[in-house]
Length: 125
Image 1 (cartoon, helix red, strand yellow):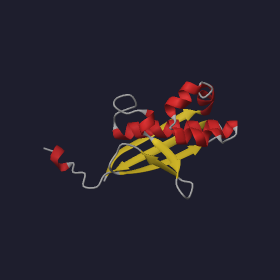
Image 2 (cartoon, helix red, strand yellow):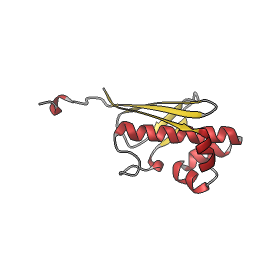
Image 3 (cartoon, one colour):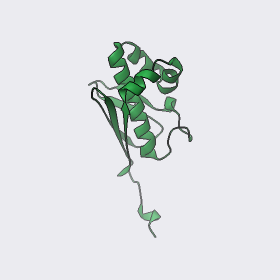
């Protein structure tokens, strides 16, 4: 059962400015994500960072906590699977579905979280 949906969009120009500050990048990306980002040419690096930012924000919205309320950027990692699709690892026991896309100006991400045996009937009285 779907228990949360989150979506986020970010302007690439804002991320380009922020990513010049290494502290921002270090806080946002895990070590493995930074290694991938640093291997890209500058424009692709900005797209990569923006996509991860949007995806992590979307996840925080899907779980309903937001970043900084018991959830940090470092607890969420998005790496490519064997086919190149993004795969998210985060503090959630169910399935996480993620989609990241870019245009010339924006990066957008959507996260859907599913949980087996999620019983909402107990909350309905």
